[in-house]
Length: 506
Image 1 (tube, rainbow, N blue to C red):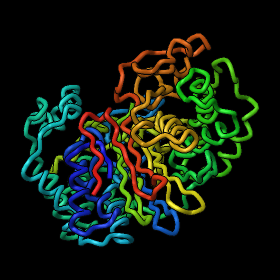
Image 2: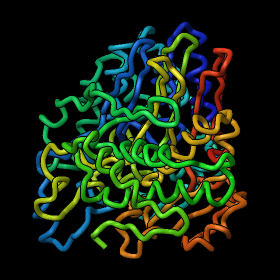
Image 3: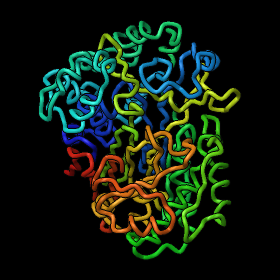
Image 4: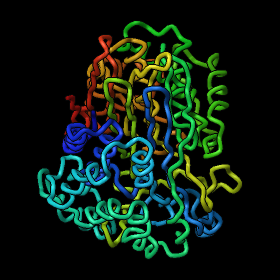
């Protein structure tokens, strides 16, 4: 199994050692990193998962909905033309993470829930050392954020500083004791209603957020690639891969021409995402539209596709067993600590996933009661003739499909090992401010290029607006992958860009 935090990976490994399966290990890992990595994810965020059962691929959408008091007109009347980014509870949708854990456990779990959540409870009650990324993220909170997230901010002051989260431990114990009601109608739910009166209702809290859905699938690079359909942006991973699969990609993925082609595929797939992605969009129709654009690819020069309108923090993890049961799971606060608001009883920070909504009147993704926002989270899983091949995914806001396109090309087209693919230099199209504005910036995206890439200058000569970024920077995601090797064994890699990630096998 692989995750962005060695303590979380150890929790998953311990779960395997106790006789748990890949789903138990995935839940245990996610629960642990919800404790140790609240700058990335947590019980105040959303979750998507793909599971290869050994016979088929199933998909779970555990993304939350806007409160019953959501009203786009009120936001427009108070001067907003986009959703509030931070410090506003209206950017918070009902967190789906816990519903996601429970749905996965009910359908596939083999251990009792108390065993699965025990490592996370131990970390929350007895403490853990602050990671470099957690300490760094805490230092960037503003005054209001530090007031809201005071428990974290006052403990995670330096790398290795001890952090204890007793409120998170109580919430986890309540889930063990009472299931979803222990969380959504317990301390957490009561506190959420207290800070969101008129926006969330008791009925909102009683409504389960997790839903089993059909995966979205496309054949490319010699495999079937699976992801979550809308409201996820996962279709962009498949769309970019479909376009790339039509091309005669060079044999060397590290020459400028090869990189240019993938960049152009990503642009052509994604430029209209703000206009077409919403919870009721037809994923297969979106793929057909992208595939039909193949003749528009500029093989030599940078194109200027952008939306007509003028860096996210997430965590990805994967687990797999020899024999086929495998999980590709992604869970997030949206941006960093999310809304920089916390539920006051447990101290659990709340995501700002509502930033994906539109405030344009009549837009299909307009902010409104009970609606799911467009989502950046997009896990991936690969099969060949129905047999499990790989689980892969990454954090990275808008850049997630771009990073996955690069990984899929290296893993399945070029036949690279997970370690070689994960460690290879990356590029990412980005907007100017948030990591969620790639396709809405009036100037169009800049091409961030990682410091150890040999092709940055050559891309600039092709007309790309290149921005040089340090090698192994989190801008380029925290990607992990597990692949079935030719001899049937499992090979995996965790991203060194996490600083504290780990892949563990047993």
